[in-house]
Length: 335
Image (cartoon, rainbow, N blue to C red; front, top):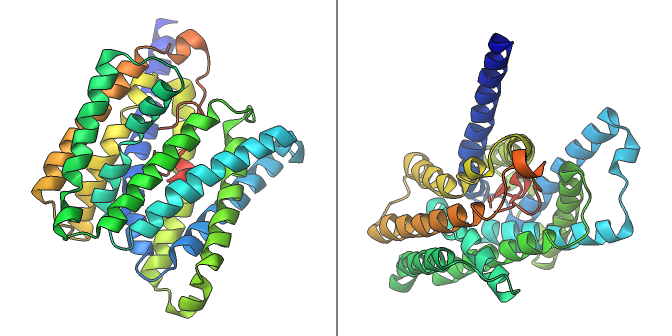
C-alpha cells in the first residue's frame, strides 16, 4: 500500500509539473506568437480566425466524446458566456493583438501582468474590503506601470499602443470579475467554447468594421503569420487551457497562480531571444516592480481562499487572472 501510494504521488507530481510547465511556457509565448502573426495578418480578423477554429475543435471534441447534449446550456448561461467572451476576447485579447502591431511583445506582457491588480481594485469597489497587504501590492504594481509607461512618454514606443494594452488589461479584468458573478455553465470547457464563439464573432465584426478585409488579402499573409496563428490555436487556445483547467482541480491554487508572474518573464525573454526586442531600463525595472506587486496581491488573496483539497474543485472561471492565452483564463484559451 505504501509503495502504491508513493508511486501515485510521484505520478501526480510529474503530471502536475508538466501541466504547469505548459502553462508557463505556452502562455508566456503567446505574446511572441501574436507579435509574429501581426506582421502580415490583420489583427482582429486573425484573432477571430483563432478563436472560431478553437471553438470548432473544442465543440467537435465534446460532441464526439460526450455527445451533443454536453454542449447544451440555458439562455442565461449563453448570455453570460457571450458577455464574458466579448470582454475577454474582444476587449482584452483583441486590443492586445491590435496593440502588438506597434508595441513589443515583452512590454505588452508586463502591462497585461497587472490584471490581478485591476481585479483587486474591482473587488474593493464592489465592497470586498481588501487586506492592507493587497493594497500595498496594488500600489507597488501601479508604480511599476508608471515606470513601464516611460517608453511611451519618451516616444520610443507609441503611447497610444501602451494605452491600448492597459485598456485591454482592464477589460480582461472586468470579464474575469464578471464571470465569477454570472450564471455560467458548470463545465469550464463548455463555457470556454461558448466564450470563444462569442469573442470570435465579435472580433470578426470589429475587423470588418475597421475594413481589415480590404487592406490585407490572404495572398499577402506570410507563412510565419500562418504558423503563428496555428500555434496560437492549438497550443494557446487548446493545449494550455486544458492544462490550466486540470491544474485548477488537481493542484494547489497557490502553485497554479504562479503563472501570473512567470508568464511575463517568459514573454520578455522570448521577445529578446527571438525578435531581438530591447530590454531597456524602464522595462527591466518597471516589469520587476509590476511582477513584485502581482506576487504580493496573488499570494495575499490566495491565503483568503481554501485549496481544492479543502473546498472541492476550484472554479476555473473565478480564478481567471491572464493570460493572457490565455491568461488564456484567465482561461488559457483567451491568450
